[in-house]
Image (cartoon, rainbow, N blue to C red; front, side, top):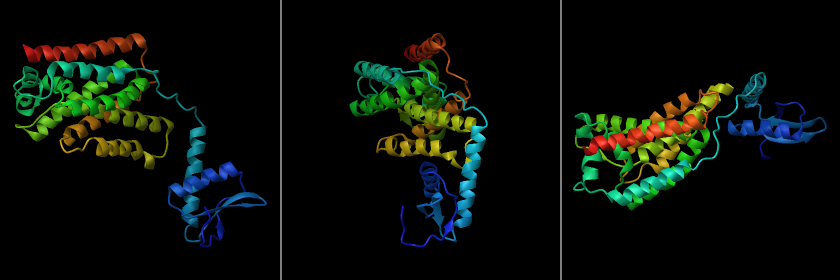
Length: 292
């Protein structure tokens, strides 16, 4: 990028165009004004005298990171394979909505299954799970079905449907439980969005674990977390949204994703199916307890 101000000091030696452009991106990301020019010796980066020392430090740190990463093989990324878990989850939620209908406390499903803080604090812990399958209205359902098709599918593709199912369940149950403790008696909520924000948090946690495994700069470790919080701000703060439940779900998912990122590779298909079956059995047992 050519500027009208003077750039009298070259902070790189002559280099190839691609290498120089990469260094230029590093300076741009750090907000350092510079000019990339070609000379007889190759491409050089020029900065003002005031920015010279800072630019050299930034470029030295970047080169040091690359050398450190190059001394050891990068671990393979966690990737289980293509799945349709998010779509299947959305279809299941839609089918259950056809049975329960929209929120109505005169309907038994909502009377015994909503995440009512008073009841949860009184010992009805199953509500933290059953509430994840209930929805207030068609719009509420549609938003969660769409989000599940994107974020749950991505999470299951990374770590497998069985592990993903337990992360979703843990985030949903944990988020609802923490929300009940925080709000206290009088608060009630329904919806799968707490678990879906758990999927977003888990994806961020996996990225954090990945950066740690590659020993990338700690000063950028906040980027996956910031991305998750940005999605929370965009998707989870509507007029009727339970923002606190969404935040708790995201945070529980973040921790779970970071722990899952320690796996050398996702478990195989048999283990994934067993884990998925156990997660579904846990949810069904919660509903059985609620309806007794």
